[in-house]
Image (cartoon, rainbow, N blue to C red; front, side, top):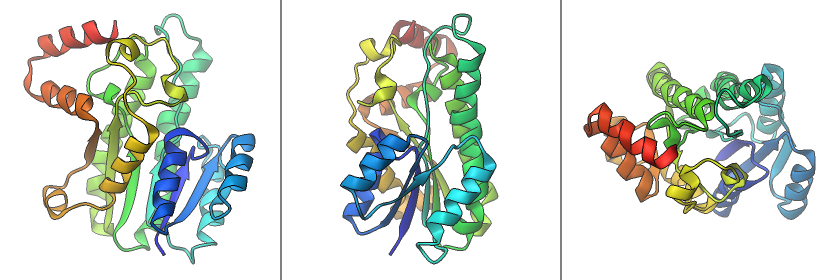
Length: 256
């Protein structure tokens, strides 16, 4: 039975992903820092393996992954680096603590998770590292500058590990949603109004499922990123071909 470990899995996209994979018989690990939400998940989904995880701490990752793989005979088919936070506001208006928290969870936590999971993924043929990126990494977004920057980090890390870990038969991919109907979208960032909050957690979960079941073309081309929704696809493709001045103008209208 294949297995998936999901950080920040007790709500939103993480929980939707857990339910999507469980539907097809996967062993699902839901780990989170929110004890109350974990208790609810465990009560409503008795088949899930649940546990506490603070993604900012390397020792926490080692403990949580050891706990989960004790239930799977050491097998780990997918690590889903899903945990993340967003604290909106201009850089000069948010606190140093808000800056640090986003970098620690959204960037450092992803790197530590990948590092700790490598030994398990390497031991499982055809394993996947899934990192949740964001459409905010297409072009730096004012009002959520730190969050946006961490998603650039996630995108770059994914591409680098896709090459570093190729010899270990580990495929690294990133998932690129725009705003989805989760707690992260409960923000005053202007783009939630100009673009709307159109995606659901299930939409993103479906893309995670697609990413870890690649077709031959995805494998042949070394695809590393998966856009979620038409808006992200359009914005992403435009960013590749439009001159920077036009990209800047578009993003100023959308986000500032």
